[in-house]
Length: 340
Image 1 (tube, rainbow, N blue to C red):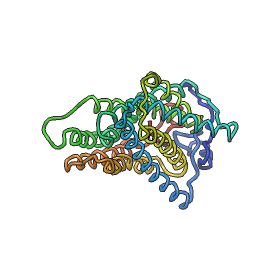
Image 2 (image 1 turned 60 degrees about the horizontal axis):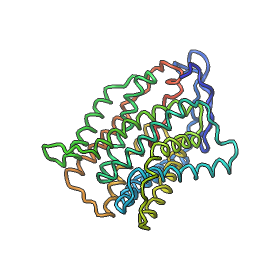
Image 3 (image 1 turned 90 degrees about the vertical axis):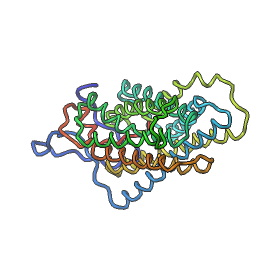
Image 4 (image 1 turned 60 degrees about the vertical axis):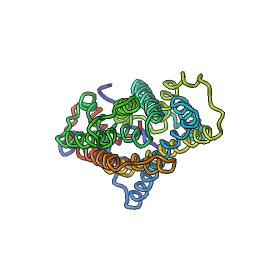
């Protein structure tokens, strides 16, 4: 990372930016830019958008499950999702010339690589285990991002992170073990956990990128990385069942809409509140899963709720702002985590 990243470029829909007060009163992050506090109407709209994003992300997971049950493998679902994503964001670039503005290319590559691997492993996980389980495991990525930012952005976590990790780990144990003594850790669960770690790395890249690159440009890097990571699966035989293709189209559409909703909402809400609302995704995934016949046991439900509570606790309180120790950390402080 460079020692003096350029000034940020605003994403469409972002709140106006105002410079921090110069001089000693500005504190340790003097020179950084902060969003002007939006009105209550804008904040209410942002909460509604994040609610919609959570519903769409959960629906995307279940549609991916339907596609794999109809004969399509997880890698094919991933590849098609990102091809559709590139087409959609390419339409934005054509309709709004100048939107594609890559600045920090090394970090964009990092975002694309880790985000692509995370998404691929996530869909491979959905192929093997229920969509709700895979989504819950994948949604531990904010805590992994906090851990990674300790080394990358030199941000020191608090004791609350340990509490959040303990709660989330207990929830994951209940989900995987179903309340039993033995832990049913299989390939699908491992893929879900690794996807979360890679997602944490991708989010760490985003926290630095958002100071210089806009959201459509970052999403394009994400889509390119995901398509490249899943390209080998594109050469496998594709199913002919219409249901598989309809579900696949649904995955591409709702996942892209969820990303747009989430990005728009981040311009109005603080990171802790945005992280809180984003944890609707695993709950929505489990509720959507009921429509395809997946059953939820009592202990599994307790595990979901406990896991979500741990993720929310760790996301909201586990990364309390401290004195930034690098220009990137200063500029990234308070930037939101996105879906990997």
